[in-house]
Image (cartoon, rainbow over all chains, first blue to last red; front, side):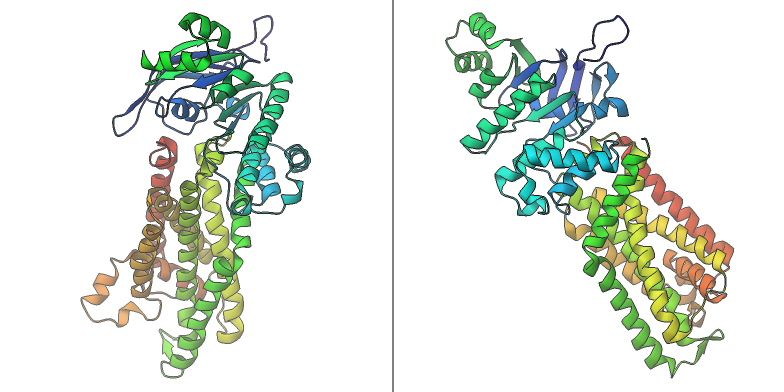
Amino acid sequence: MRTNGDTPAAPALRLRGLTKRYDDGLLALDGFDLTIPAGTFFGLLGPNGAGKTTLISAVCNLIRVTSGEIEVFGLPHQQAAARRMVGLAEQDVNLDRFLDVEETLVYHGGYYGMSRARARSRAREMMEVFDLRAKAGTRAPKLSGGMRRRLLLARALMHEPPLVILDEPTAGVDFELRMELWRYIRRLHEGGTTILLTTHYLEEAEALCEEIGLIRSGRLIARDSADALRSAYGAASLTDVYVKAMEG
Amino acid sequence: MTARPLYWLVAREVLRVLKLWTQTIAAPVLSAFLFILVFGLSLGSRIHEIGGVPYDQFIVPGLITMAMAQAAYNNNASSLFQARFDRYINDILAAPLRNWEVNLGMSLGGAVRALVIGLALFALAVPVTGVGVAEPLILVVAVTLSLVLFSALGIVVGIFAETFDHHMFVNNLVILPLSFLGGVFYSVTSLPSPWEEISHANPLFYIVSAIRHGFLGTSDAPIGLSLGVIAVLALGAVGWSSWLFATGRRLKA
C-alpha cells in the first residue's frame, strides 16, 4: 500500500524474533517471525494461551516486549506514524464507561490526530454503517452486547487505518450479527485494508482469510491458504488440519 | 496535528469531571464550605484572632488546600484506576500519544477539577469571611506546585491500585489526617513541644502554610522553605509517574 520510490511496498506487518516473557515467567511468544504483506486478509488460529492476544498486544503497544522487532508498513511499531496505521478491536469489550457512542468515536478520532470536524463527520459515517445512529447518545455500559461489539469495530475503523487487527470480533455474537460483520469486514478488505484476524471459529477463518497461520505455544507452526494447508496436512477439512497441527 | 491527541485526552478527562459534577465539584465544595460556615462562624466568635488574622479567615486557605489536594488526587487515581480496570486505557496506550503526553493529559483532569473547586470555594468564602489574597504570586506558585504534587500522586496510586479501596485508603488514611494535622484549623506554633516540632515533619504543613501565606500574607513556616519542600515533593511525584509511563511498569504486562 505504501511505497518508497521504486521499492516494493513494505509489508503491513513484520515481526522478527518477537519474544515475550511475562513477569511470572510464562513464555508467551518465542522468537516469533511473521510477515503479512499489505492488502492481505490473514487469519491466526490457535488454542487459548497460544500467544495470539500477546502478539496483538505487542503490535499495539499494550505490553512490554522482551525482545524482537515489530514494523508496521516499514516503521517501528512504537512510532506515532506506525500507531496511526493500526486499528484494533480487542477480544474483550473495553469501552470508556463515561462516553456515549458518538463521543467514543469522536474522542478516539481525536486521540489519532483527527480534527474535530473530521472526527464528527467520520463518527456519523461509522454510526450509519454499524447501525448505531439511534444509540448515539447512549453510554457504553447501557448498550446491548451486540451493540457494544459493533461499537468496538466502529472505533477500530474510526481513523481509517490501513491495518486492522480483529481479535475474535465475532465471539459471543448471534448468527445475524456475525454474518453482518463478515460482510463489512469483507468490504473493508476489498477496499485494500490489510486485516489480521484471530478467531476460534475455523469456518470463519476459511470463509474470510486468504492466508491462515497456525500458532501453538508461542510459535508459528504453519502458514498458507486453507487449500494448501489441507493438502500439506493430508486433511479433508480445516478442522482436521487444526487438530493435526495442534497435536503435533 | 501533534498537539491534537493530547488536547483530546485532556478534553476527555475534563468531560468526565463535568459529567460527574455532583460528585466531582458540588460535593467537595459543599462540604468544605460547611466547614467554613460551621467552624468559622461558631468558633470565630470564641477564637477572635490567630496571628492577627480573624479565625474565620484563618481557616479558609487550609480548607481550600485540603479540598483541592483531595480533588486532584482522587480524580486522577480513580480515573486511571477505572481506565485500567475496564481496560479502555488500551485505546489510549495504542494511540499515537507519547508517554509524557498520556501522563500529562491524565494529570490535567485532576488539576482542572481542583482549580474549579478552589475558585468556587474562594468565591463563596469572600462574602462570608472577607478573606482576600495578600500575595497573589506566591499563591499562584504554591497552588501550582501543590496541584502538580497531588495530580502526580493520584496518577501513581491509580497505576498501582489493585482495588478501588486502595486509592481511598491513601486519601482517608494519609492525605486527610495529614491535612488536619498540618494546621488547617490551628497554628502549629500554638502546640506544645514536641508536637510543634513533629508537625514540621508533616509535608501537608508546608503546603497549608504556603497557600495560607498567599492568601493572608502570614504563615507558620518561612515561605521559601514551604515552597522548597512542595517543589521537591512535586518533583519526586512527577519523576515517579513519568518513570511508570516511560517503562510501562504496572500499566503494561
